[in-house]
Length: 127
Image (cartoon, rainbow, N blue to C red; front, side, top):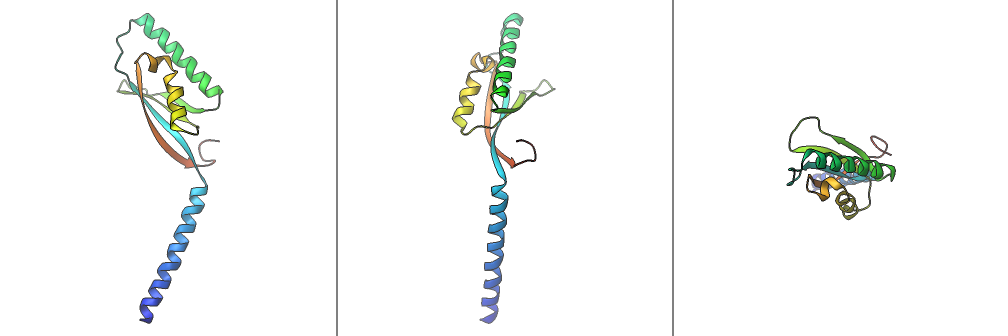
């Protein structure tokens, strides 16, 4: 019986230590939204139209970056289905969707996207 109580006490104190460590790490995490841009369903625009859409896409990126909501943006260098990434610092997925839907490349179907909530430690990668 003494052994059971001793082991129970140790397990109790270990669980408290683990919970405290998780809380400390959790306090140091910041949420973001990681977006994967993919080829959209409508990519058959002529070259002049595609260039105009791309220009609007770059203007959208610059506007979002200037607003402080878009921390990372960049294309993948291969020609695969995934075309690029964004990392947004926003309060909700709905606000990210609204910003993505304002991009001409998304509006025209040239690009599609996936949104993934993501976290990293404060101060390691971003503000």
